[in-house]
Image 1: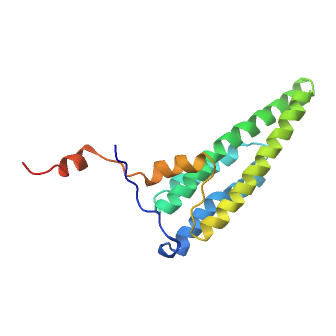
Image 2: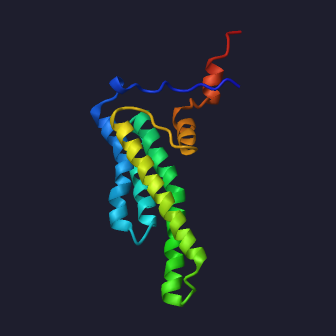
Image 3: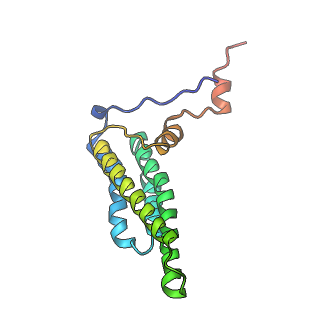
Length: 161
């Protein structure tokens, strides 16, 4: 099957507003971290709200807000596990084990990496450039830029009898 994609918008074709909205999808996460540090789910909720309010503002904004959202999922899960594990240690007397220490170190490395990629994504989006996160970029590109074929489109493209 020959799949078709919408053309990728070039930087000179984008308005400053589109670039700002795409950049905002990455920067919004930093603001929500300050508010929701003890509750990692706040970041995910903010990403979902941002995505649904901005996805109709063009393919460029849709792509970046979707990439930001789906890349937020594993970060939220990792952070939530760390927070709830820490709560159980603090309030319920669980052992402060080497496993917990290792998990927290891994979570910190993962979060720092995510922050770095988000900053790069925000800068690239502000310049009107596409920036693809590993794995999440491909998913977002396929979801946003792939032309969805419908039965009506296929019927209309049939040769005359």
